[in-house]
Length: 263
Image 1: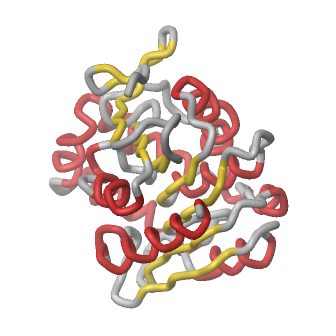
Image 2 (image 1 turned 135 degrees about the vertical axis):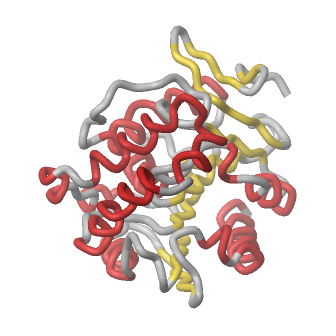
């Protein structure tokens, strides 16, 4: 398959993103688009995209947002609407560049929020479904408190070194860009609920009962307000990353959902 992705990078003009393509191209199959969490990147998905692509027969597009992984750095502080900007402006450009016309967006945490925005603004009907893993559409005190605490962990333990294996020179950009935005007092007013009524693609919601960054109220808000059917998978003994904590169950549920929405 011919795509603009070469040597692990997607370049558009002066901008460069770390990127992977897995499986068949967009002209022969639908595409799973993987949108990583607030501290994630291409590498931190590990083999989960490969497994989901193999099980569904779809293609897969995985990329690191600017300031993450090996993508271009960004200036800090990040704007407080960085997730809206990614879903509104950046992701559609990447889908256009790759010729993706039928997609299921698989978003984790911040990536799920980006998927919400992108699907809501989808005027071309190319978003066939949404998998939202640990999504957030408004701020919660418990989530912000966890993000406040992790700053100390980052600065006093080996967390920075572990993240640097994936982010390299972007490690501080990735961490402080995310942590700084979420703990800014003005971010308490951040809210994506206004986007939900304009989502018409089916939704699968996946969350761990022990998620330290969000509660089930996030899922309830989406189910209540989305303009489409939204099914919920709430997992016991599971934290903020269900695809890592409960990979077999999550993979099975995602495969079933993808096959149904693309049938």
